[in-house]
Length: 285
Image (cartoon, rainbow, N blue to C red):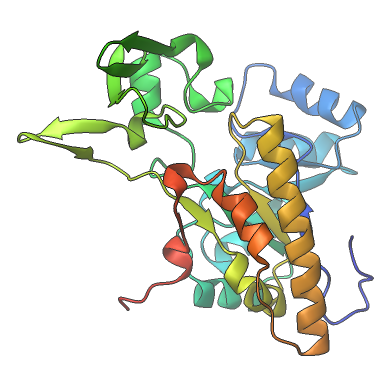
């Protein structure tokens, strides 16, 4: 799906990453070597030690800067390009649209942005809350809530969700139950029960796809921690169709409107059955 480099605007990818090394594990060199041997197209990396090893020992493997590196300026991204040969950077979900445009104008590194999925208040997945409750690192486990730590307790008054023994929600008998994470749990504070940290809501940038494509975004990332095969299939089908349609609209100078069936497919998988543009759009500014 990559357009020739001679074109003024390269067609963006829909991203399903081949490998991700987001933390410095004890056998990181072996992990990087194995990923390369298995045919990974690229490694998504945040740790500088991993970058250094890959640069020195796997020079033919593309390196992508992980969202967990928290690079929010073109200067930061250029540092990784000069130092380690990074070819793509994933921007944090806190970067506004006008900031994305400035970053793209200031670097030759391909820029990837989040398009759809759960929002994270814990430094893009490095969740101290989950680690505290479960004793497991979300990075090393690859999940926000390790399955071994999740308990559903049914009773006459509904279902209680626990993570590592911590009660994080209590659902009525007929109430829909979502992915159990501490950050989106409901807790009682001063006699009032609510989503204290973050209300379940999914990012959805489909409405601004032409704007992102026109400014030069090269790939769109779909959040997928602990998601089902049904989620992957339905969500990626909708986004593939939307990206292709938005690309054609930009190239031909036409208006773009997301099709109802695309948005309906995404709504079925949105946390809390609601979506937002989050920091991409800041009407209060």
